[in-house]
Length: 303
Image 1 (cartoon, rainbow, N blue to C red):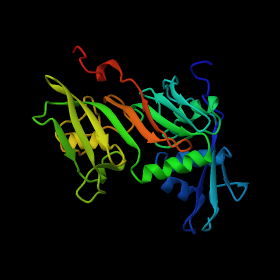
Image 2 (image 1 turned 30 degrees about the vertical axis):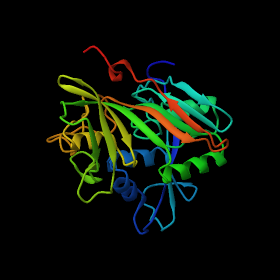
Image 3 (image 1 turned 180 degrees about the vertical axis):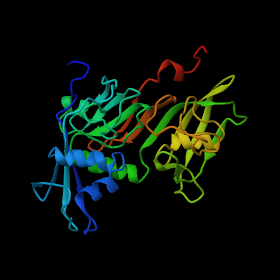
């Protein structure tokens, strides 16, 4: 494949109209602000948009319940590391170790350069039971059957799955273990409109951080999460005064950095999903999956 060759075969993005009475071009421009009206007009002129099974012109008036389909042509995705390690494999489950920089699911311009696509090349039909941020490495568990997926999804909801992460935060705390319960919810972001962060009006969240190694200006933590809010560890350690080293988004207090903070998918921070422990959905036995941390997140790392 050449450097400018498409990474995929294109994709059909479908959107259902909730409130009718608006034109196709206006609907697309308002619903998908990553592209302006002129860009959507050119896509309509190229025949890429369909409404009610017919190529759209752009001036059609939409009805509630209509489905607008954008047939995005093949495109060249941003580079991402596609290699992963299989940690556990049986007829019901597969657990893999995701590299940092590889998105778990399609989105933000990624389609085939995702862990989901790469795992399904080897394990067709596998479905992820959780997700990691693009910059986070470590264990991701997939179900290979509907029965296993239902059982483990129920265990996740009932907080029966134990997850421990390894994180490298800035600063050196005076405490050895801290139970962090900062609520997490949407707050303003200058580039996205809103982003999840520490918020008194947010949903309850709990993480327990334990110091593993103090390294002068940084600290290695193990973090046991009891809830699964978006970007929870990044927000919670930042709210405790120890943002992840290199985090482009969250600053002390758990809010977005002032001026021009990064985006949630930006890379640079150090976070690894180290262990995952659960009861096997078929055998009932306790299973512990471990993804060895990268050298910088291992204890006794020479700075």
